[in-house]
Amino acid sequence: MGCLAQVFEKQNALGQLEGFTSLNGANFYGMAPHRTHIRLVRQSTPIKQHEKIDTPDGPLTVFDPGFELFWRVEQSDNQ
Image 1 (cartoon, one colour):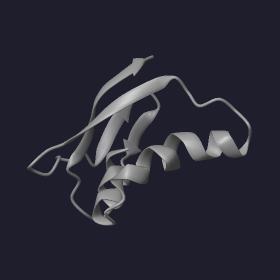
Image 2 (cartoon, one colour):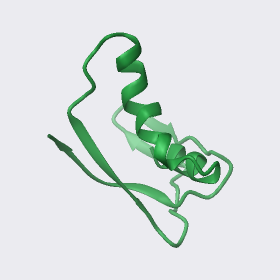
Image 3 (cartoon, helix red, strand yellow):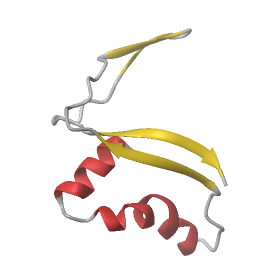
Image 4 (cartoon, rainbow, N blue to C red):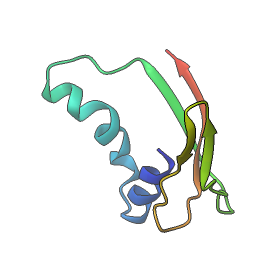
């Protein structure tokens, strides 16, 4: 989500992020949107990315978008 927020911010389209990620697909298929909400927070310094995350099945390579990310998910809850 941080990567998408960064892309939408760069395009001056943050107001369209919720529709793109949560509403448009559900509307198209006649489904109710999810009731889970997240809060995205923009930091003033770039977020340090891990290259790999260890899992029980072995290391997982983390996607590298090729640019610095400043957005992170601060909170996720059910509403």
